[in-house]
Amino acid sequence: MFDLAGEVALVTGGAKGIGKGIAKALKQARAKVLIGDVDKENGKRTASELEGEFYYLDVTDRDQVQYVIQSIYEKYKKLSILCSNAGIFPQMSIENMTEKDWDKVQNINLKGTFFVAQAALKYMKKQSYGRIILTSSITGPITGFSGWAHYGASKAGQLGFMRSAALEYAKYGITINAIQPGNILTDGLIKTGEEYMRKMKEIIPVYTLGKPEDIGYTAVFLASREAGFITGQTIVVDGGQVLPETPNL
Ligand code: NAD
Image (tube, rainbow, N blue to C red):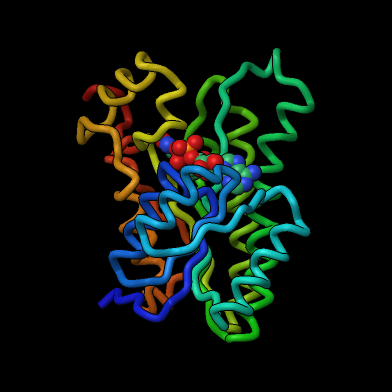
């Protein structure tokens, strides 16, 4: 079960962090893994560790996204799995947020998801098969956090996009689902500071931050042929963080 041998997977933002965790798990399940990222150094390193290939890919550049995905399809003759994972989460108050700050987060997290999904769906429809997995978040769709209004909006937006896309493409053998990670220990999270990470650890019922691989294993499940009857859904992977009715009880 969950054998991805023969599948070709593209992971955006796969150079490090959660994307790398997803890429590693897909490779463990025997998929061919391609990394699409703006970080050339880490991207190339991760791709070579996983015997995959690195593609320079800025998810906000629609022409580039279409060109890269077309090149992948022409080279490998298929693109079975897309993990749309590239994202940023700079923290700032609404009071200080400029239009540029707002747009940057929406462009990478939300518009980028649309660009890569749209480009991949064209080829997935041709091959009558595809698995798209979005990295959303608990922040936005379920919870709120001061300083992440723009981020929360982008992560909730991904789920709105996903539900209609899932319906549009269900008849072509394509499923589109999302993972909602809680606090996962990555460079992106480390940027939020020691104090934030310490507080988070205390309130997570399993008393630890998540690992990128925790998201990776969930992605393998959703990417598998066996998950073909699941579409337009989300899986929360957060160590129980959103469960308590009252903190610390
Ligand atoms: P990270 O900063 O460690 O890694 C993000 C990766 O995305 C980097 O390799 C970066 O180069 C790449 N990237 C950034 N902009 C890009 C662009 N325009 N085009 C292509 N690649 C780009 O972050 P992470 O913590 O691994 O987060 C990955 C995803 O997981 C994001 O979508 C984030 O919102 C989501 N997420 C993270 C957490 C967490 O706790 N770490 C929780 C919930 C959701």
